[in-house]
Length: 142
Image (cartoon, rainbow, N blue to C red; front, side):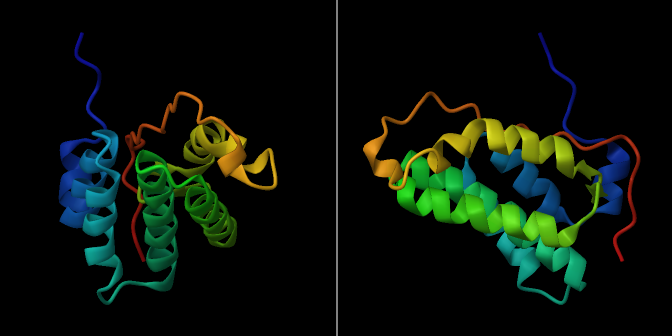
Protein backbone atom coordinates (compact mmCIF):
# COMPACT_ATOMS: atom_id res chain seq x y z
CA UNK A 1 0.00 0.00 0.00
CA UNK A 2 1.44 3.34 -1.07
CA UNK A 3 0.99 6.07 1.52
CA UNK A 4 0.43 9.67 0.53
CA UNK A 5 3.59 11.63 -0.24
CA UNK A 6 4.73 13.95 2.56
CA UNK A 7 4.46 17.05 0.35
CA UNK A 8 3.09 18.28 -2.96
CA UNK A 9 4.50 19.83 -6.10
CA UNK A 10 3.42 23.23 -4.68
CA UNK A 11 5.61 22.64 -1.61
CA UNK A 12 8.58 21.72 -3.82
CA UNK A 13 8.18 25.00 -5.73
CA UNK A 14 7.55 27.14 -2.62
CA UNK A 15 10.23 25.90 -0.21
CA UNK A 16 14.01 25.66 -0.22
CA UNK A 17 15.42 22.43 -1.64
CA UNK A 18 17.30 21.80 1.63
CA UNK A 19 14.02 21.80 3.59
CA UNK A 20 12.38 19.27 1.25
CA UNK A 21 15.53 17.10 1.14
CA UNK A 22 15.69 17.15 4.95
CA UNK A 23 12.08 15.94 5.15
CA UNK A 24 12.87 12.98 2.86
CA UNK A 25 15.98 12.07 4.85
CA UNK A 26 14.22 12.45 8.22
CA UNK A 27 11.29 10.28 7.13
CA UNK A 28 13.81 7.64 5.94
CA UNK A 29 15.41 7.55 9.40
CA UNK A 30 18.55 9.29 8.12
CA UNK A 31 18.61 11.80 10.98
CA UNK A 32 22.23 12.91 10.68
CA UNK A 33 21.81 13.52 6.94
CA UNK A 34 18.54 15.42 7.58
CA UNK A 35 20.43 17.56 10.08
CA UNK A 36 23.08 18.28 7.42
CA UNK A 37 20.48 19.28 4.81
CA UNK A 38 18.62 21.61 7.18
CA UNK A 39 21.84 23.03 8.60
CA UNK A 40 22.98 23.98 5.11
CA UNK A 41 19.91 26.22 4.82
CA UNK A 42 20.09 27.38 8.46
CA UNK A 43 23.66 28.65 7.99
CA UNK A 44 22.60 30.91 5.13
CA UNK A 45 20.89 34.31 5.18
CA UNK A 46 17.43 33.29 6.43
CA UNK A 47 14.80 35.21 8.39
CA UNK A 48 14.88 34.87 12.21
CA UNK A 49 11.71 32.75 12.40
CA UNK A 50 12.92 30.34 9.73
CA UNK A 51 16.30 30.12 11.49
CA UNK A 52 14.58 29.27 14.80
CA UNK A 53 12.31 26.71 13.08
CA UNK A 54 15.20 25.04 11.27
CA UNK A 55 17.25 24.92 14.46
CA UNK A 56 14.36 23.18 16.27
CA UNK A 57 14.02 20.69 13.40
CA UNK A 58 17.78 20.08 13.37
CA UNK A 59 17.80 19.48 17.12
CA UNK A 60 14.86 17.08 16.94
CA UNK A 61 16.65 15.13 14.18
CA UNK A 62 19.88 15.07 16.20
CA UNK A 63 17.97 13.70 19.21
CA UNK A 64 17.04 10.62 17.16
CA UNK A 65 20.58 10.37 15.78
CA UNK A 66 21.92 10.28 19.36
CA UNK A 67 19.49 7.47 20.21
CA UNK A 68 20.64 5.55 17.11
CA UNK A 69 24.20 5.64 18.43
CA UNK A 70 23.26 4.94 22.07
CA UNK A 71 23.56 8.39 23.63
CA UNK A 72 20.28 8.98 25.52
CA UNK A 73 21.70 11.83 27.64
CA UNK A 74 22.68 13.78 24.53
CA UNK A 75 19.31 12.88 22.94
CA UNK A 76 17.48 14.33 25.95
CA UNK A 77 19.46 17.60 25.73
CA UNK A 78 18.62 17.96 22.03
CA UNK A 79 14.94 17.10 22.63
CA UNK A 80 14.65 19.76 25.35
CA UNK A 81 16.45 22.36 23.21
CA UNK A 82 14.12 21.63 20.28
CA UNK A 83 11.04 21.96 22.53
CA UNK A 84 12.31 25.31 23.80
CA UNK A 85 12.81 26.60 20.24
CA UNK A 86 9.36 25.46 19.11
CA UNK A 87 7.89 27.26 22.15
CA UNK A 88 9.76 30.46 21.23
CA UNK A 89 8.62 30.20 17.60
CA UNK A 90 5.03 30.16 18.94
CA UNK A 91 3.31 29.39 15.62
CA UNK A 92 0.73 26.73 14.83
CA UNK A 93 2.04 26.02 11.33
CA UNK A 94 5.41 26.90 9.84
CA UNK A 95 6.52 26.08 6.29
CA UNK A 96 3.33 23.97 6.04
CA UNK A 97 4.32 21.79 9.01
CA UNK A 98 1.66 21.48 11.72
CA UNK A 99 3.91 22.18 14.70
CA UNK A 100 1.46 21.02 17.37
CA UNK A 101 0.99 17.68 15.61
CA UNK A 102 4.74 17.27 15.01
CA UNK A 103 5.52 18.05 18.66
CA UNK A 104 2.88 15.55 19.83
CA UNK A 105 4.66 12.88 17.77
CA UNK A 106 8.00 14.05 19.16
CA UNK A 107 6.70 13.87 22.75
CA UNK A 108 5.26 10.37 22.19
CA UNK A 109 8.62 9.20 20.87
CA UNK A 110 10.93 10.96 23.33
CA UNK A 111 9.14 11.88 26.59
CA UNK A 112 10.51 8.69 28.22
CA UNK A 113 13.89 10.49 28.22
CA UNK A 114 12.46 12.90 30.83
CA UNK A 115 11.07 10.21 33.16
CA UNK A 116 14.25 9.78 35.23
CA UNK A 117 17.18 12.01 36.25
CA UNK A 118 19.58 10.05 33.99
CA UNK A 119 18.05 8.44 30.89
CA UNK A 120 21.04 6.08 30.66
CA UNK A 121 19.38 4.14 33.51
CA UNK A 122 16.52 3.16 31.20
CA UNK A 123 16.31 0.56 28.51
CA UNK A 124 15.44 2.36 25.29
CA UNK A 125 11.89 1.53 24.22
CA UNK A 126 11.06 0.77 20.62
CA UNK A 127 11.21 4.13 18.87
CA UNK A 128 8.38 5.49 16.74
CA UNK A 129 9.87 8.76 15.46
CA UNK A 130 7.61 11.38 13.90
CA UNK A 131 6.75 11.24 10.25
CA UNK A 132 6.85 14.65 8.64
CA UNK A 133 3.87 15.32 6.37
CA UNK A 134 3.23 18.88 5.27
CA UNK A 135 -0.24 20.37 5.31
CA UNK A 136 -1.70 20.90 1.80
CA UNK A 137 -1.70 24.70 1.99
CA UNK A 138 1.61 26.44 1.38
CA UNK A 139 2.41 28.92 4.14
CA UNK A 140 4.60 31.83 3.05
CA UNK A 141 8.01 32.19 4.63
CA UNK A 142 8.85 35.75 5.64
